[in-house]
Length: 210
Length: 315
Image (cartoon, rainbow over all chains, first blue to last red; front, side):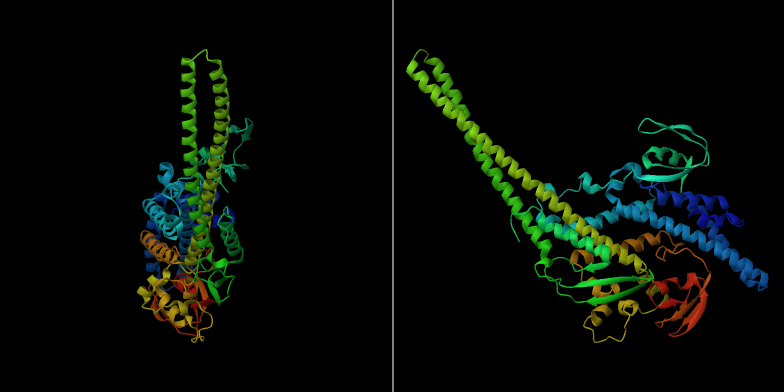
């Protein structure tokens, strides 16, 4: 996955940092079992850049020299790639929201991770799914005491015990594992651990999922 | 169906959902009146090839949802019956207990009367054993009611799983066909769209009884052969979901969310027009004239949605 996205490093026309931030957010999002904080600022800045670049490309098109054509296609390629990562990032999040709607709507912590429109999406999605259940069977065949959707089995919280691969960005020294053992996490190494043991580190940005 | 089942009937729904998931089939909603299944073959991830196969299934099988609902009603009635019976036993029990306490206090008042005392002990023993057997009976009722209660719970969960698996399948089909892009496309390009053109591979089949229905199915974004397999609440879900996506897309205008998730490799692609589109203004501002049978070398992002909808084929 990283090999594909490393191509972004070659760009010098758009803000490489933001692209890398977005790419990492995208990879983290795809690797983590729960929904992570929305990178709204990064996305806003990137969209701004994309717009500026599009204008720039249009200006270039007016010039019809041959070498300009090459530069133009590099720009367009770059924009296409950023758009792809962005699209995949947003869709990964939508997918998680749809799978874990109830868990997300019950937890203020998760809700804080969503963008405004994602939160609206989650609420509306929950509503239409609930309506489908109600019209299909919930209301006409179950007594009121059984109509609630509060059962933890139905809510379906994300499986935080899932194992994830990650790379450390700094030296941690000994990291305490839940079973009491310690593990020496050194910089730029790849490990495989349960998600909830490294959740805090991921939120600090001290590690990245791969 | 058996009226005393404990969620065996609902298990059939789960088996069907599993079968559908593994084979990529979208079966008719499992209730009366839906007797065919629709086969959805995902081809190239972009083109949906639909085969409408009216296969009569076992009549007993296609009303499983109804049977489960019946079973739920029976279970609920039987719980209430059991609780009523238990109530009766419990009140009998408390009568006996208070009677025993009464006779005990009476006995204390008449101390010394040996005859009476032995009779009283005998009576007490009888009442005691009666109380014991009654409380066993009452526990029995409680356990039976509890058992039925858990069966209802299980039925509810299985119904949820079945309906959710269908919702997920509908969701996947909507995304596969461009997440409702068809509607917005029709507005933009002035292209007359209908699902029959969009997806059915053999266009010539105008004698198909579904043809007319297919023409009208543009609003749902899915071909009639599929929407016919849905229950009315599922159809409501479909249209609500499509407008939800439309709304969300509106907040992210710069990104085409519904484009196929394929990493971009080439800026320009060779496409062949398999269904006439005519003249459209692409996002980049260029005017494209796409007539059937022609081949064009165009910007991928300009024609992506036409590829998704099956108008163009990438060469």
